[in-house]
Image 1 (spheres, rainbow, N blue to C red):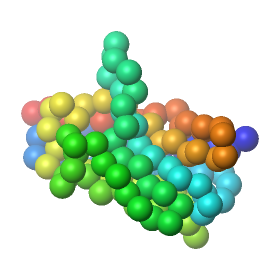
Image 2: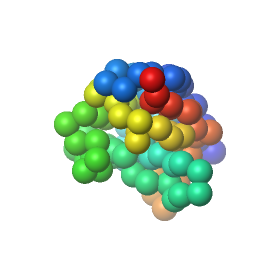
Image 3: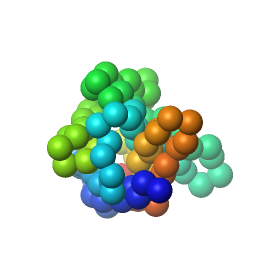
Length: 114
């Protein structure tokens, strides 16, 4: 059972930046990972994903503002978020796909507000 722990959420003003991190309890080097977000009453949506080989994909709403990265040596996944908007407010979740199984973190809250 892989454990994923997100950190780095908080309150930030519009236009600001924040970096989220996700620490995995086991090696992530062979598996795709991603960041997802969810607001109350809505489905959990993909924000960004990254393959084991480092190919990234982004939701249209965050392209050019967010950057996903991974450090396989440290078993960590990161999401650099710039030019934040109020509509980015959500709980952000880290996800790992290992073969046919998905693992999720507990989530970290990001609030973008003045």
